[in-house]
Image (cartoon, rainbow, N blue to C red; front, side, top):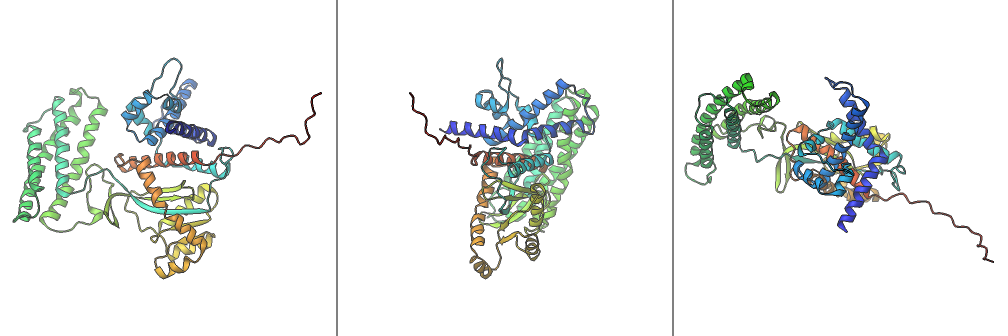
Length: 480
């Protein structure tokens, strides 16, 4: 039964992709991006263009299915090789042979379009469900009567940003990259990289000893000074090997793009490690706090921010702010991912309403939020645009009074389910945790998750009922 249900959902998603034009829109945008690149490729022949369009369709379907299954690149490639249902959905089945994409090809599929183009594909799908529901096989048009908005923290896949741990991470990355360069045949005079890794591990063990011990504070300062000295030596060795690789990479077996991959890895850590070292000095030795906007939370993802949630078990989270808006059936109408520290919730409401109105060609009927969104400016804007105000007031007495309105009470009760919708998106469509590294990759993974989520929900909506065939009213003549 579970298999039959899943097969039916995939068939419905396939029908929605074809009928809504989302697949055609995706392929066209991929083709436009290829032809309008800064350094465009030579003009494609008709045969090459047909192959690229077929590959774009596979990129869309493979990434949708992989997001739905929550598989990594290699695992998805293996599952696709042995499942005829997945091969049919991804359009890789053939009579003579089945050739599935490799894990590297699946990774390229996940980055086929940028996040801005993916947002346009999502808005086109929603516009089709709103304006031509019968074409998609839906019984009713997309519901815009209720709009429920909330914000959350989309956590980055980083460990807890302890100051001295950042120094350990930097030493490990620099020495492992240096080891690769030395193994490729480029060497500068230095001790073995493994020796520096061993010394940093020893200092890390001492630093992580229990805090309840006499002289612990002075001991941490002493160990941190030793770490700083070791970091300086490691940075100098890594910089010399980095310059050597940049100048004499032809002596190795690597290509220039492979060498640049190592160079980028070294440059990122070499740039941030002095700031991390200063941050650890200020907090541990100087005992002075560091402002949140100046903190380094990860050497590998500089766009991670400190999000103060104030909730039990999650007073502070590390990631980026995500704004999410859904309708009554749970379809995500709008989302926004903020690279910098997002302002308070109240300034986010007007821009979200304008984005929905832009693709929908009209306004929503009512807006319901929690206590973080109400403000005098927001209430005036809702009144001017004719949108029903279901923003939860901060004053308990005012909230009690507004609950006398049945429509307000009904919208607020439904608004509580938005927390569950956020959890479904984060855990079932984005992964736990979200494995994408870097803000741009997380933003793109978010767009894929929203598109997959909306297609899955649209596939579950009621289909348009077929017209009943009228039976003849006159009695049939009796056979002679």
